[in-house]
Image 1 (cartoon, rainbow, N blue to C red):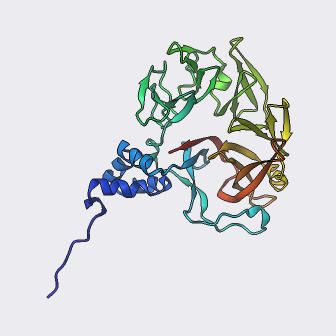
Image 2 (image 1 turned 90 degrees about the vertical axis):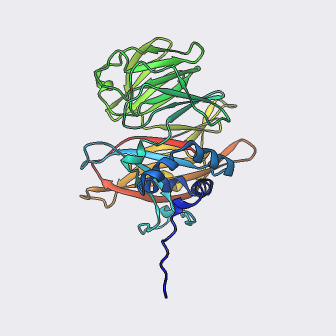
Image 3 (image 1 turned 45 degrees about the horizontal axis):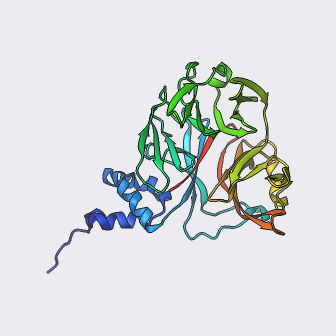
Length: 363
């Protein structure tokens, strides 16, 4: 005599156990898990799961990349995925192509709308802007150490995937709206008065371009785009200007500014008031001449993204490389050294692809 038993379902477990299990899984698996069913999708974006992850201290840092591929009408989002338990190596030291499981994986469109907001930190508060495809004028704010977001005063126009930065205690937001929105294409939020003010019109060339990054340098805002030149805004003068495109990329880690171009790395020594070379990265410098894309603060380490042709000559494809650099001070504070923790090919794309922008967030 035989009896048949229905296979137990994961979702049939008590709600608290389901949340506890999901909180222990890397968020890199969440996009695919969200496709299983609506219940999974709801759980994965719930505040309860966020609270559970905080209690379990399962904090992670993620690096998202937005690329425009030639065979797709709209830009696609990808996230850096590292297989748990994988032994990461420096493939720059080898001549063979990697077979590892470190790569840029596309985020399903159904899950991308749930990606955490573009966050700007000002003092003890964090401000979040929607980074999904649907335009929104909402800006969120929360105190440091809390989980709950509350609404801040709305922007004057709805934006999708806008970029922002902080200068002198004010939040500057640009793009993400209709390119013919000349009056409010850029605006600034005064945290003290809790009010929005429009920025001067930068001109149609910038409004219709694809913005990659906003950077603050010497009390001015630099708008990096995919055009031949960059734009700079001077808040004190209230004027825009056009400058030659810079091949320098910058990021801030533990209050230290790091910069690089296609030949070298350096950091700004606030004591000596001068730029100094980051040592130990000669092998990386030899490879960056191919095509620097982006650098970022990735969990207090340097993340570098660059591309180069798969084969020299007539090859139509490019490999996108990624490397993570650990940083160490030696001889007191006089020298800063970088150590290549790992470097690998994370994606192969048509050479005509366009890098749109990137986003780093912790969860």
